[in-house]
Amino acid sequence: MSRPPYGPKRGGREAPDRREGRVAVDSPWARRSASAPVPAPAPPADEDEAAPRELRIYGRNAVDAVFAHRPEAIRKLYLLEARIPQMQPLLKWCAANRIGYRVVAEDDLRRLAASAHHEGIVADVLRAPPLALGAWLQGLPAGPQCALWLDGVGNPHNLGAILRSAAHFGVAAVLLPRTSPLALSGAAARVAEGGAEAVPFVRLGRDDNALAQLRAAGFTLAATVVRGGEDLLTARLPERLVYVLGAEGAGMDAELANACDLRLGIPGSGRVESLNVSAAAAVLLAQWCARSR
Image 1 (cartoon, rainbow, N blue to C red):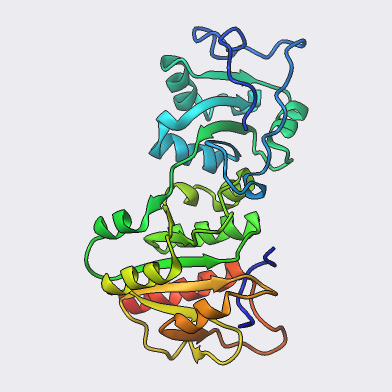
Image 2 (cartoon, rainbow, N blue to C red; image 1 turned 135 degrees about the horizontal axis):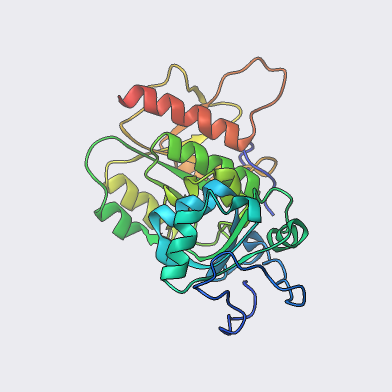
């Protein structure tokens, strides 16, 4: 099996809102009563092969990004009292649209997020459905475009960091194989700092058909490898490029790596074997961005 790349080893929401548990829309700063139960944390989406339709996210930038791009996806909101001044536009929108929200204590918010890194706000939102490859290609503008194909990457923090870099460098999409269980989680959305709303997921069909469709649209596919690849810093990068990234340890599927048009490696000092998948993605994207300008 082809060794490298970068990435880790392969391998609900609460009960439906019953209205009586909602905060009255004319009392936007109402607190949760002491007797009101706090919903259990949503299970991490990355553990489910079929990701649930709803996702619990946390972190100021993650929630702000959903509000900016897909406000209709917001289903419920929980926040600390200290966050009220900064979140007034969102809270007023929730009140106007009859979306329930609660001001809760720190311990409750930590349980809701299943994390101490909630930054004072948690939201239950509808997932953005992944695009089909054909539909994505049809809507893609002409000219330079870059996408990431993630083969075996599963760690939510790596995914979040990849999405943040992808948004920063203007990546057109993150491509996921048909059999990949990878899905956005609350942890990934927080680490992405809003990038999860800026970069769409595209769900691929059969790999051979996906390769043919991408090539027909003018894309070159580049497998990113630890050893035996062309030096990224001196390689000629095409204007329309798909970087294929595999998991650390297992690496990408050998058949997929062999089917790619290029093999690229990131040169280094040799003091460590390779970069983490998210760090590698940032280097790869920066190089493509610099060459495509």
